[in-house]
Amino acid sequence: MQAQRVKEALDSKISQDFFDSSINLEESHLEEGYREGFSDGLDLGQKEGREVGLKVGFEFGEEIGFYRGCVDVWSAAIQIDAKRFTPNIQRIVKQMDKLIKLYPVLDPENETAHDIMESLRAKFKAISASFAVSLTSHGKLEYTGLAKFSGASNVDF
Image 1 (spheres, rainbow, N blue to C red):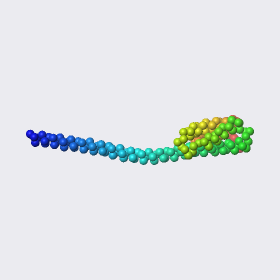
Image 2 (cartoon, rainbow, N blue to C red):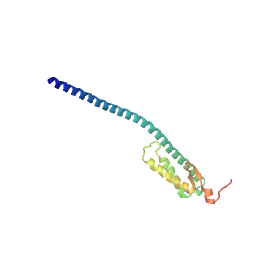
Image 3 (cartoon, rainbow, N blue to C red):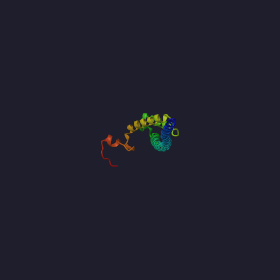
Image 4 (cartoon, rainbow, N blue to C red):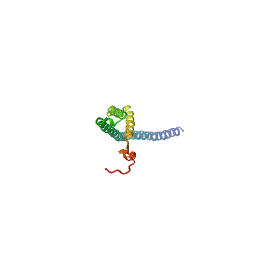
């Protein structure tokens, strides 16, 4: 009888150890999978983040460069003949020039960057409206003044 109890205890212990090792095996596989997935996700996230950052950074740089070019042309035109531009337009051009100089090109995490860009966009729209110039859906400047204001549909030069 004693031998029977010892045998049952041993069988119970063996089956218990078998299930414990199965549970431990599953847990170790879960932990290993988590570590590998986390590492792979971190690498992939950095690569994708770099790509998106370059794309978005280029787009902002392109937009700032566009505004810089517009301000330079408008400033030159104002210097040539200031009477052709209202004082309000002259003031907005100067404000845009200051905003472009304030834009934190080398500090992309600066919180003022978004506010400056929004202000530049609004000022550009105000000047464009007064010049009868607009952006097409492709982001290109388009002069809409001549045909719209004179009623001419086809003008030859």
